[in-house]
Image 1 (tube, rainbow, N blue to C red):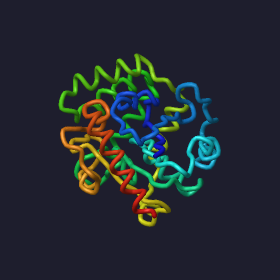
Image 2 (spheres, rainbow, N blue to C red):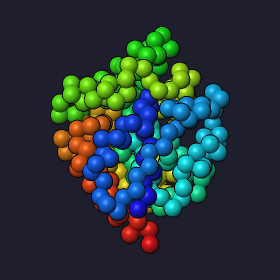
Image 3 (cartoon, rainbow, N blue to C red):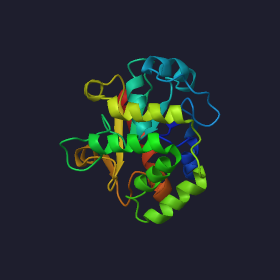
Length: 239
């Protein structure tokens, strides 16, 4: 069973390393980079989902299950309209859109706008703040933040234009219509204490107890098992 692992805003594929020793024997995981992260060349900015689809097509085979986290979940969902769909899509810590105006919990449009302003003033400091922010829902937030810093270092492995484009996608992507009639089975998973998700999104997902937005740090073994289990069930559903 092939799993394609996709990371989120400001975080490259190293975030998945914590799961490497916990995958069941039938799983073949492959973590791939979005354009502009790690060694993957950046797209010209501003860019479009069409351009992203063209670049990602060789990395996102249709005979696999895509496992997409955070912004990666929003982007992978949007790409379903532009690429041959996978056998299934697992959304981890992601809903149909990022901002949660009018809902209980999550990130409001005003908060995202403030974050974008701070990013324009000091991208690296704002990225570091985001690492602390997304670690807040873990049982030991300080330890989760320490793990993130140890994995990712002191600066992001993405250029400023790529990060700014990611924030624009967080602001504008809305996948509600697509998720209402998806072209493949979709399973949602979320940390029970994810500070970036509204309550409604967490309630619609398979909840990972004692976890926040980064269960790959706080709950690597249970997360690997749940992802493999949900991928298997989704594949059975698609037959």
